[in-house]
Structures are given as structure tokens and as C-alpha cells.
Length: 95
Image (cartoon, rainbow, N blue to C red):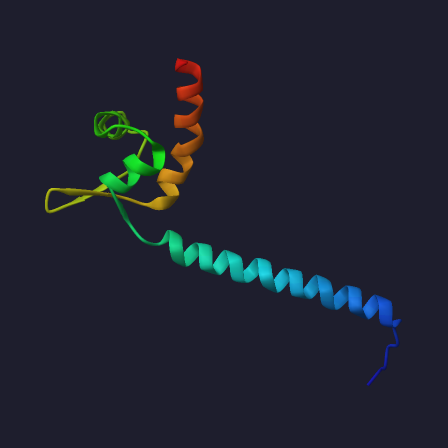
């Protein structure tokens, strides 16, 4: 077995970087868990700050994927998140 010796400062920097890596990994895991929940139409309208009619237009045009269960429409948060910059850009353009 080989022993490698490093300076204390270098070791502390490595530990700090590993701590940052762990924090980022935990944040990604939490975000993934949070993003796995479905959103209904009301949640999407509030998040995107759009009317139900605009939401229907996004669905009808195929720009926003959705699933329908028992006459209720659900959206994946990932898909809604991708629409956020597009909707914001369109609102700025319309002003």
C-alpha cells in the first residue's frame, strides 16, 4: 500500500470541494423528487401567469404536453418549466 502525503491546506480545499459536490447532488435529488409531481391546469395557469384559454391554446398547438385522466388535465412540471421562458418572452413582445 502506498502512502501519499499532502499539505493541510490542499486537503481542506479538497474536503470543501467534496462538500460542495455533495450539496449539489442533494439539491438535484430534491429537485428531481419535487419535479416528479403532476400539476393541474390551475397550478400551471398560476405559475405561468396565463389564462385558462391561453393554456388551452398551448395544448391545442402541441407546444405543451399533457395527460388527461377523468376529464382533468395534468402536466409534468418539466414541460411547464420549459414553457416559462417562452411565455415570458411572448409577454414582453406583446407589450
